[in-house]
Amino acid sequence: MAHRYLQELTAQSSASSTDVVPIADSSTGQLKKITVDNLVSAGRKLNLGTEAELTISSGSITLTGSAHSIDTEADAAADDLATITFPSGITLAVIRSENAARVVTLKHGTGNIKTPTGNDWVLPANGFAVVYYDGSFAQVVGSPLEDHTHPASEISSGTLTHERGGLEADVSAYDGIPKIAGGATSELKINLAGTTAPTANEDTGDGYSPGSLWVDTTNDLAYICLDATAAAAVWTEITNVATAFSINSLSAIGAVDWGSDRLAIYDNTFGDDRKITPYDLFAAATTPTIDGYNDYVMTIDVSDNDISKILARDLPIPIRYQTVLSSLDTAADTIAVYDDSAQEVVQVTPYNFITQLTEDTSPHKTNDFVITRDASAATLKKVTLENIYLDSNGFFQLPTNTNAGRGAAGTAGRVFFNTDDGQLNIDDGTNWTLPDGTTT
Image (tube, rainbow, N blue to C red; front, side, top):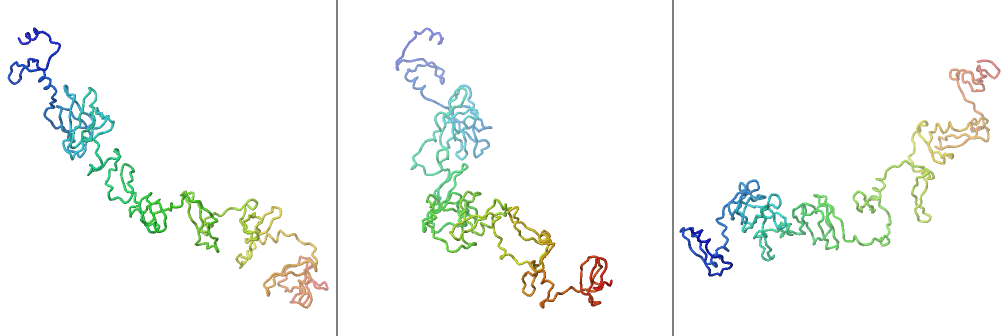
C-alpha cells in the first residue's frame, strides 16, 4: 500500500532543508517522516562498526568489518602482512597493531598491498593505517598515522633508520666518526689528542680499525690506520703527503752503516714506499747467469766521483782477496784464463792448462827456462836448462839409481850413475851398457 502511495506522488526536482521525506523506523516498525537536513547529516556520519582482532596467517588476513587490530602469527616478535582480502560490500578499513611489542610490516608488492612510496611500511604501534580496496589492490591511503616528521628537539628516544637518513644506533658514547657499512653502524675511532706517534699496539683491541686517524699534537703529525691487527697494527703518516721532496735539502752522509742505515724503496707488492737497509737490498738480489759480452757491473770512478759501468768480461779478478788454496787438485780445480779468440775469461784445470801448451822440441840450454819451486823461499823461480843439472859448484850432476830400480832398457839415450857397480849405465835402446860397451 505504501509503495503504491509513493508512486502516486508528484516528482520533486529540488528540496529544501525543511522538506520532509518518509522513512521506516526499524526499531518500531512504523512509517515516520524526517527533514532533508537531518537525513543528509545522518549520512555524513561514518560508522566503522566494532573493532575485531585478526591474526596473520601465512602473510594474509581476511577482513570481517571495517575496523581491525592485527596481530602476528603465533604471537611472533615480527611478521609480514602481504595480502588483505576484502569481503563484498567493504572497500575501506582502518587497521592498527594489536600489540606494540610485536611488529607488523605491510609488504608493498608482495601480495595485493600497495603503499604510496613503493616501500614496505611498519604498522604503527600507537596509530592507524587506512586501507582502500580498489577492486584489485589494497591501497594504503596516505601514510600510517604515526609515520610523520618531528622536529629533532621532540625526539627523545629510539633510533632513526638508515632509510630515513638515520644511524640506527646510539652514538652518544662514540669517540670518533659513525661508520655505516653492510647495513650496520659502528664507530670509526679517532684520536685527536695523541702526544706521540701510534705504534703497532694501537690496534683493534683499543677500538681502532682501518681508516682511524691519529693526531700527534707534540710533533704536529697525523697518521691513518691501514691495518688494525692485534699487536701488528700498521699506521702511515699523512701529514706531508703533498709536500714536494727535495734531496738537496738532506745532509750528506759521512759513512754508510750497511746494517742499520735505510734506503727508500717503492714496494710494488703493497703499492707503498718502504725502507730497507743497504745490506738487505743487496742480499735480496738474485744471482744471475753472467753474460760477459752484455752484462755490466757498476763501478765507482774515484777520479771524477762518478758511477760508471764495465762489461763483466773486462772486470779484473781481485785474486789477492781470495782464500789461499791449501792443496791443488790438478784435474778438478780451475784457474781463470782470458780466451783471446772468444774475448772472455774462461776456466781451465791446471792439468789441461799444461797439456794445451806447445811442446818445445829443440830447447836451448842457456836461453830456455823452466819454472821451479824454491821450497826455502816458498816461491816460484825460473832456471835455465843448463843450470838444472849443475850443482852449486858448477858440476854436472847425473841422476842415480840401482840395478833393481833402473828398470828395463829400451829408451836410447838414458844415462844414470849406478850405485851398485859404481859405473855409468847407458841405455842403448836394447840393453844397459857400460861406457866400454859391456852389457850389464
